[in-house]
Image 1 (cartoon, one colour):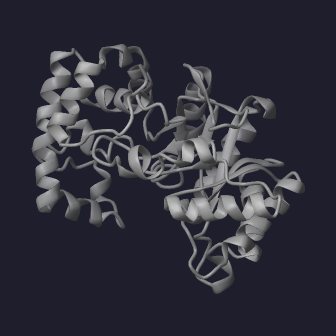
Image 2 (spheres, helix red, strand yellow):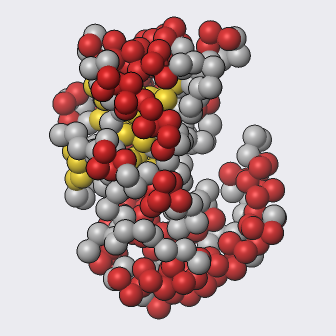
Image 3 (tube, rainbow, N blue to C red):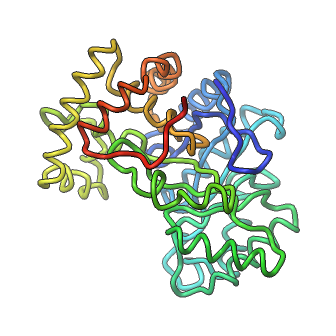
Length: 329
């Protein structure tokens, strides 16, 4: 495991991190959470990602119990939460000062920690002035309740505005963004955010490196019975797979799978190693409901050297995309 700076901050995050979206509080209970987190930690993972909106807070409860059971020294790991979807009432949603503050306190209680290392605005909020959100985040930093704040799925324009407000008011600016990034989803990380890596020193904690399982190759023939596409609330994934764009991606995955076989790699290892090759990625968030799945994902670290510039060029030819900057070579 190697460690990368989170943008221009001094915080070092493991290049693979572990997240709880879809799994904790749904597919993973307390005992399994302890097993998964212990294996990740013992193999160098130091960042554990969560959010108030994951299973209505239950994901954080499960992770908090696991952290208590494991008893790691607090200075040896990084834990996050995200604020936006806290409940149905008007004061339980969005990025108002009230909800940003209430959600931080609730996350601290559920996760059983005294502070959050990373705190994300889970989505932009058109009903709240950015200045109000920036001030609320700065206050939480001043109170020692969070260390760094950032965003998830914000546009470059929104990030630039938040940074400008913070600098103008001499407040703490956003440090990181959590965008979706994978072979099929590249525009934000490789193009839209490009000016911000130098201007802001933006770090990225990317999610969905396997494109919701598409890049594992398991949907090349049919949807497996244990797929998240069969879970309540995830019907949209199956609809996307059956769309014209989804069918095109299935064909592209077949071609990518052939390329991976030529290299002696599984498609999962290939897709994860591809994400690591981007120099603007601070950490790749893994998700797993079984220990064997996590073990296999982490094994992609041993395969990264196979993704040479020539191989990456072939990927670009298959998916019809080109990065604006060279990769990590």
